[in-house]
Image (tube, rainbow, N blue to C red):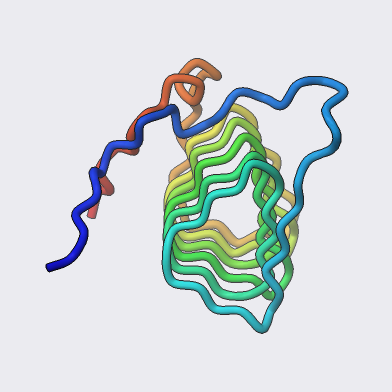
Length: 141
């Protein structure tokens, strides 16, 4: 007798940008001592230095050095310095020299630093793709 939740969210996955002059972007920090299994949502920036397994929706996501994320990412901006296994859906993606990515990276712009290790397909998408994204495509095996 568990709770059944709809797979389709009631809103777009990528939220509109914050208004200019708003009082800063909220920041959430998950330290290396934290392990989370489940979905995370943030209206601001989420920094992961621990281990997360699940879907992450944020305005900006940072998987820091030593951080590990297994799952789907939906964000406006993504910076990977640690490890990610899964899919990224983001307008802007930056892979640092210490990044290890395995999966797919749906992006509009991508920057890859020398030394980043990537085993991923990286299909380009126009900004309108992210602005109208309501459900994630099924993962291919």
